[in-house]
Length: 232
Image (tube, rainbow, N blue to C red; front, side, top):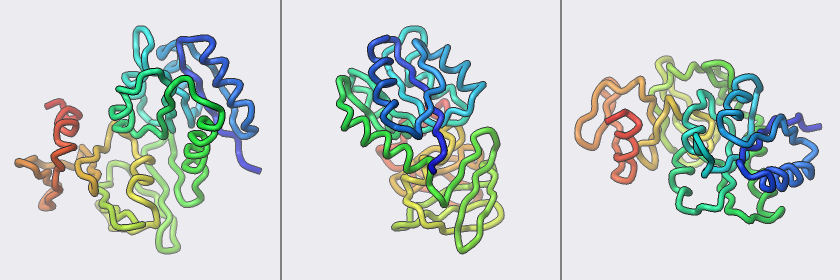
């Protein structure tokens, strides 16, 4: 039997919260921990509970959904539920699992939840949301790797090359799949084929980021967001 997935509903509209709650009831493996009317209430719950999936509205008073997500130290799977399509690019930059435009059907909701649950129940990868490490399975072994020890990750077909202070490993996981497992406050995608650890950057020169003597290209479509994340 599949384990229960703790989820959180965050929307300032009571009717929207009720619809999502009803949709969630069709999933016996989803456990709705709370249904919140604002992001500050949700943040307090996320700090106390092990939340793995959030259904998150964007346009809310005081703190909007995108800003709320940036405040989370360890990012869960997030399905945005909003009436505003113009935030989609920014939402996916924050590694959103899916983006549902209101009003959305149960069928569309099921597709989004299935995506999230597939990632959360992956047998090869387990993220410790309360710790600073990740377990990665490769070459018949399971490695415990601290986030701070990861230099960068590079796309390699159906694999992802992960370069750390101790070793380089090549697990069977897509690049986008691996990106979903990383905390966004530590890692930045700088190119369609590269994710880097912000703390490992030694310097930046033009369209290249250097990690010691290794050059990482910065894609033109990623540079503005990259520099913004660095506070530049």
